[in-house]
Length: 636
Image (tube, rainbow, N blue to C red; front, side):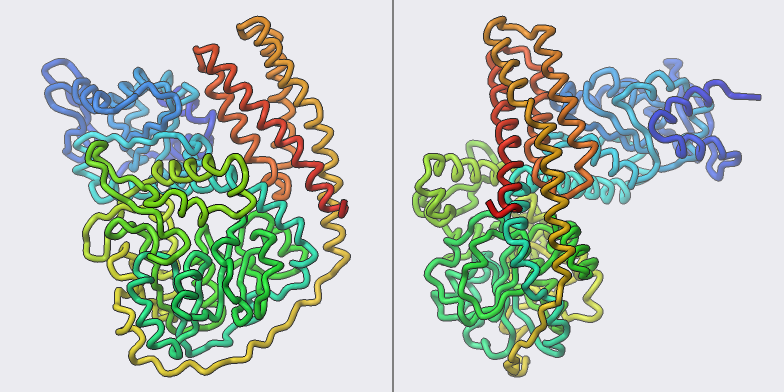
């Protein structure tokens, strides 16, 4: 006989996950035991393997106390994750109070089957902002779809679930925090540098096709040691040790560390750069003629004009146009990663070259003793201090003018927006202050992106520390599991001298026809997109004119807005599978739709108009990018 309660609950789930609903339906026997009880108030409770899930005296009050602790619970741009369904008291409270998205994660699918047979929960499950799953990968997918860079995520649970799943809840929270951080980092990357990275790549596509790749140096340093010098505070502390043992390792340096190394007459063997922005001030006045340059294809175009010993490209997997370029050039980049930090590019390059020992120095990944970067490095003027009035850490420039000169290239320094760029950059740094565990077990401040980088380095160690001796000599910095914490002199003292190798390499003979075909395909696609975008500026202008006249959101404004949305969705749905379109345009469409969310809920007419003016600028910039890139492809 059909259980209507179960059927209605599962039908509600089928709107977004038919397989999950069917999986619940197929459960016939359960290993766990479930029993309904009632308390003195007449509330139902659940005995799960003889453990009472809800508060014995007042289950509803228990749930209310949990939701009462949530700040801005009505926030629409929030994801409320509930660890454990129970009999639905806690989800009921959230659903009645929040306007954001709700994800219920129940680790025991058998409990779902048992509860769904007796609990009429289909009305809540049918709401567009409510989702349920028993799989972490599915939950992470929900976050990926529902969250933007400003989304707030909270995790709530009953005491019983904490007692049942204490260790899993901790790892669960870390997993979600990491996923959300990655989402924010990816969104920031797309919004901030993706258009420039795309233009850099397209502008230099012919140079790229005539430059050797790092894998052409595979295993040339087998049996040797590599030292990767990053710009954290511990680099300055180890400068004398680096000079003392300079002949016992091959030195990789990142751009921000070059000023300090040059000041101490230390010449790296390899310099790694992965910046789409113009960071030429990091290298101004430094003789690079004896240094091999490793950089990403999307890196800023000034790198092609530097006088260096050799150039090698590192095609990291999934970075901007690298996949489509690798396919065109017929090269394998499946194992290449940089994932956001230039030091990881150096680490991956050292692995390819076959080093048996790789040592990190200046990879503090935390703000130690208030220092953000090593003294003498490009960004030494930044410091992280505890603001007792605000009761939190904050980043500031010790000498603002000095920092501005070091941060910005001459072009931006002389522009009218120089102060805006600097202050906005520092503001973004302060918005992402985070805490991590230091090597001594203490909690130290850092940035959210550094916390993500720690996870990436730990993943590298997990996959490679059986074959490579991985050492972290960034003493006092963040703990990186999988790397041995060791003073730099202790790591180098027994090293033999590293023989000098005259680097030889081959430039692959690429198929020029395929490269030209790619350029032709890009040009044709951009022309199609130009036709889609052409009317949008006028439509957005009409919205502002109409609003200026009427001072209200008229039906005509709504129609104009719908036309713009239709065209942008057409662009996204048809062309965003192509990286040379997505990475060029997504920055503008992302921000346009983020503003649109605010516009749709905005009560202030003044703020409404301001947001629409911002969207006008975004449409204008998007429309202008397409002919700019087409001109580069056609050499105009």
